[in-house]
Image (spheres, rainbow, N blue to C red):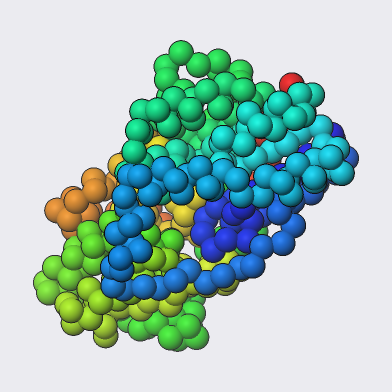
Length: 384
């Protein structure tokens, strides 16, 4: 099988990059894959712009009509080069990691009727980037019709599958494959004190930690405000935030306004290979919010590292893990998050119970690795 993997996220600085890199790396290992190539082959890896002030351009981008024009423009990106690449490489399967470019599916199907097209769908652009688009119902219908034309759709969660395809979908063509983790990169490190000294974190503090792309829709103010209230009641608390994104400066300004600079660390983007050391400095990992359709890969990384986790109240987490047995779950508000943060901070027995759970680590290793992720996708591709 010859696979052309069309992903604009491969060189990005967010979770989509990890997903694309790991899928490509693991698909290459299977003997059934004769050849696999990435398109586009080169993409400048730019740092995410850390802007604080809202500009006129930001306001314009929120306009429904502007988003309509932007969406159609986005669907022209890479199409000419992709067409040429398909003609040259002659793949059996075109695997597309969809961002906002699903209109390209019908164009490619017309031009290459014998080409198998598989869509890797991590959500709908109309939930985030194009949520204010004019004529939204029309575009949602276009999205649905586009995915009817593929040979296989891979959704990140059952919620996303039902949200996009409705309840009357073909389960053989529309499958769910959850995210994974690299268990070789994420594992427990026992000596936290030495690690904290090496990385510049306070040795004796109780540390809450968060890692992820700092987008405006991630509701980081919930975490910042919850931490602010808790540190007024409890001494020696510290918050680590690792990640970059459009909301970086806004978050930093909020931290400065609340006089939390001595109790927080904002490192910006870190190379993925260095993440395990940093998260092993956490006492508790927090991922307090995610859209309902998501399946946050950071949860699997935290669990592989043996950390107690406060996770978002979304279907994929509820369906995969047991509350209070595997992890804690918070609703997307300050009262709920503060309750769970204070609860695990004050309960040594609970914290120990949720730390380094070998059965849970084994569950992640057996079910939620990138190798399993790639294997499930390949097995379904071979059925086409």
